Image (cartoon, rainbow, N blue to C red; front, side, top):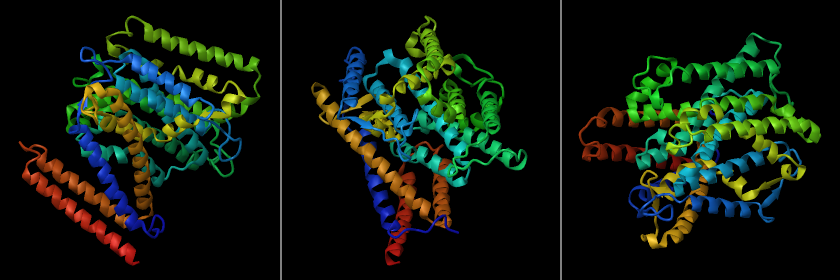
Length: 497
């Protein structure tokens, strides 16, 4: 049975998109491992940091992004409503955080480590918020929705990891978003099943009718996420957040055992990264539970009614700053701060949201450049490690192989990086569209082929003394030729039809 009817031209579209995607992956691999690289303008030979470039660049970008020509008016209509924290604002926020994040890596600006960590946590917060709003409005817990999200987060990441020999966990935001999405999907999906078969008085959410999940369903779903998250990440926390000698816990059975089979770097880094942000999606989901009411109340509220909200948000922000500035946590390049990040990382978000929507003028306007970057945030995140930076993010890509041309290189490489991000999103969307319109038989055969291909390499070549010897290349080319033959045959049959 078909997922949906195949559209004419899917074969050529898949072939052309696959070839172009392979070309750009080759470019990323070349830039990451072969192209010239250096340190400037990120720093100097004596000190590989340039916080001044980070601050100056962000200030100039802020002035440009909110200039009169760069600000877009959000129309108050059904397609683009001017509401508290609407989609346009969300994308703008993601854009700002992504720019700050890329600039932090590029300039090695360790002085802003804590704010950057807060930005990473805010992305996880958005995972909880966005999925909570969607699922409680639509009750769409279908396999298609699940696979669409997993595909969006991991497709380009998987290809880059294979092309550049980078571990999946090194793109740690992808791991964070994937894990928290799966947890939310399971918890809210289980709660919907309770509403369908046990608590039949709970109304079924329906986006077309504007009917959301009831408060009881939201509360149970949120509590399930809290319980599951705490079971996985709370016991125990070891020194430096490593788990090599930890007693068996639910986390070990769910994650640690199979992650250690990959390698110890993946297992330890996965624990470290997920432990630093394990509470963030809970806070985002909590706001999603009250978002509809707060969104409708905020524009009508007087300043006197808003004042307590500002006071509480300011207090939360002050607590976060105070903790980050404590002598115990403010030094050592953030190593000590990581142990408390999970408890204060999202405390700044309420104040940001309230100030961002403090006046009607601000609610109705967004920075178009930042909104556009936010719509491409995943591509900007992934490709920064191979096209803007290089050598596993340890150096900066050069087009002109001279450090004296550092700023010229920054402009040229930055332009290439932005263009590649645009093409990456376009091509992944084309491939995804083709896959969704394929028959389940074709999708199943492709999935089986990929699993078989990976299993052979993993099982046979992993423990060989020379994993990149002639035999491994021969097997790889054999698989590639057969796959290309099937793709060409599919294209020919599609054209013939």
